[in-house]
Length: 321
Image 1 (tube, rainbow, N blue to C red):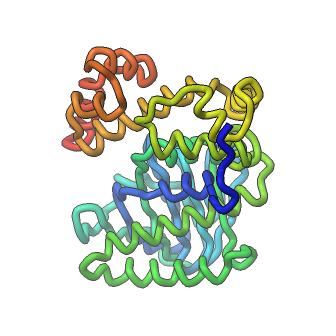
Image 2 (image 1 turned 135 degrees about the vertical axis):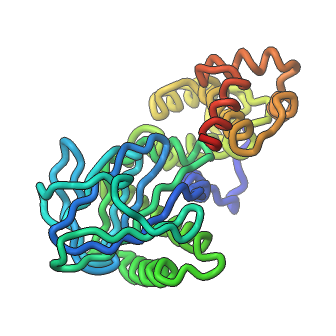
């Protein structure tokens, strides 16, 4: 077996967090006055982010205990589940798209709503991930993540980032949308870090496997080089383990065999190439080592449930719909 050099540092979980680069679907600066309630519809494949710039709010999800939010707090709904933001639990909520909104740019709006009482200001965003590592991580997060910036070990970072984001949202200078998106990247990573540090659920399954010193090393190599002709022996060598021990441990931690994971990862990468980067089918097949488009298409449909052409058409209709 090839033992990795002792000076080589591998941070598989850190690499997964690196892929949390978001594409903004829409941003909204909300100016509320009590009593107020805002109902956000389900947005599949999106993560919803709420920052309380001033005042107070409550986050309500069906089946979950309402969560109080104060100025400086951050709330994330990772899987785009429909939810409500209110001045008090149980307040009647108007639908997001039923309220008048001032369009500041193609994807940036200002919303004003409420009964004239205690004010609250929030920055809300719906963002999408294209990289499969980011999508898989988001799928494993709880229904909602709430970060109290005053109690967080990253309090100073969060406070400064929130202030910067609020300032950008108020003025929306040239490049403001890009600034807000990159600042949202930072906030999401900080929130996920806190979840990993405090929640036992973050130490099992895919996230737990990434944190395993040996299995995580092999997973990182798969993520970096999906086109490589991986074998079980080669992956075991990366982990500095015997073939049988590696195979058993990988399956136990990840929930599927190493070679199944390789195949699934390749097809998730291919889906992103076809939908986000508009890579031609022949090129995607070649880049992943397939000898023919037909073989690639069969594998793609087996893992993604649709043909490559159908996946691309679905993406195009979503962009133009």
